[in-house]
Image (cartoon, rainbow over all chains, first blue to last red; front, top):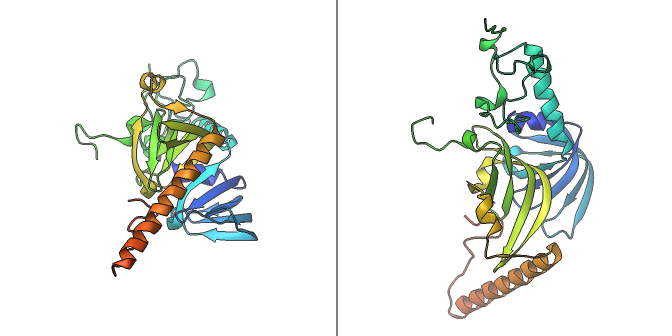
Length: 138
Length: 133
């Protein structure tokens, strides 16, 4: 799953955003877009040296000013489930996960495929509608 | 992008990587996701602080790093990791060492600025703590 999709999945979760100037913003993600612009609510802003604090009900951060975001661990598990659900929903089957067909094939985009050591899905798991339909191996 | 012999970030997925950021931070974690801007998703990340021959690790969890802030990244060789000449210390100790190091560096900068000023020359630090590149 792409990094920005992970962010979309993390909506309503708490997170820490560090800007390029070193300020940190702690809050819950309301929304995000393709440019990584984000909306946070119940925000606590901490200055670079950790000595000044501000509290605000909501804030908007322009994507280009972000250095990184830290998310809670549970978001990764949420993503894995979503990838599995999506795989099942599209009804794709590559004949690989023979016995596991009913469960869906969680080997794409790098998530959930750890134990198998299989090749990561190119393009981060978005297989595109062009492929669709069941491929039956006779 | 897919020319023969070209390194791809996709090949590094699910590997344990060391990522070095423009602000000088070193992060080590498992690469879970990449996109066309080289934005990264790191899982089970630790921030490693180095001062001299000592280092300390801080657990950080999941990182979504904006690609433009990355200087370089490289795969961690687990075998070599076990045989480093570096000494691992506690978080408190390394943070203290880092603080002392930063103070020393600031003093040097101030000395430099004063030195230049006394000679009638302007000195502005070209690199700052935010972006060392």
